[in-house]
Image (cartoon, rainbow, N blue to C red; front, top):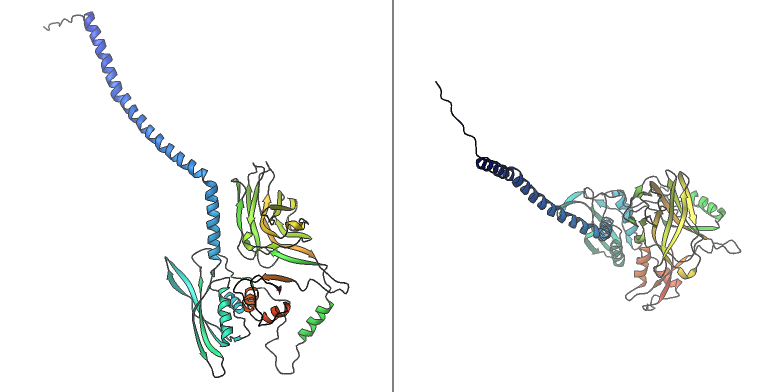
Length: 458
């Protein structure tokens, strides 16, 4: 028989102590399993906060330097474009021959052929640069050879003169061979594939090389003379300021919400290329302009033209103003809007009359621009081609064109010679006699610094 275990009731003090013990255990458990992990989490969040705050400060510092970064980027982009423009984008023999034909055109030197090597690669720095050697045999005078070497230095694309051999014959003529080398950026950077736009000369008629006998008469000359005599002169002269055949333009925004870019387009109104201008403008400022920087072309307008005009291709209607920005003699900005709003599609010729105040001339063409009015956000694509200045033709009472003999001036610098000036302006010294005649000089006359020479514009 089991004995019953008698349980005595807890006293009030014992109950109080058990309650206190339970509370203590509860507090200790909460601290260990709740408060301690939360405390660690808080410390971790504080560390993350400090890290994020540091990143925010760094980002704010970068944002404060955004304008300087944009300017530095523009400068670096221009430097890159200048470097690219000095080298051949690809080794195209036709383009190289066309360029050399202009540079090697000397009356005192005869060049009958050119020999091109197969393209090869040369290690330059960390790049393998494609290059090609050109062998040019020649015959002529020593001065003529020197003039050719000087002309090679004026080439828009770098042409390396590797070696020159010379040998004087019994008649005093120089025979020899030049070895030239051209480099290509093909495969290194993205460039325009055309070195130069090959324009067909319409004004010059050369003899055909296929004359079958001595008494053959080339009737082409007579036909051209008849056409020339019967051609009626236009009452105005069109001077092309920009034809956008070369990549020498850059995009610049007036504020940070103006985005855009400029490239070349094969859809052209004149020659081979036009300028493609893409823009996306959030117009929250008073001035919301996307600029096309053309200052590198160094285009000077010496006196007021009747009008400034541009061919513009639009894909859609737009509230955009398209215009031209000039800078006067004191550097002041002169805005000339060519159209306020675009209400057509396709090509259209737009023009405006520039200021007639002679005191602000000569003006320098600085930029083209597209402007969107405030609170009229807009994006689109425009093509631009053949920016030109139109002048009234000066015709005398006998109908003679007095503009046909346009002249320019050259201020003589220390060390200048007539031959050097001829090379500088015409890439040949064959016009030195013309320069002497225009300025009523003899070959033995001195050429003091500061003297102003009259040169014929070509």
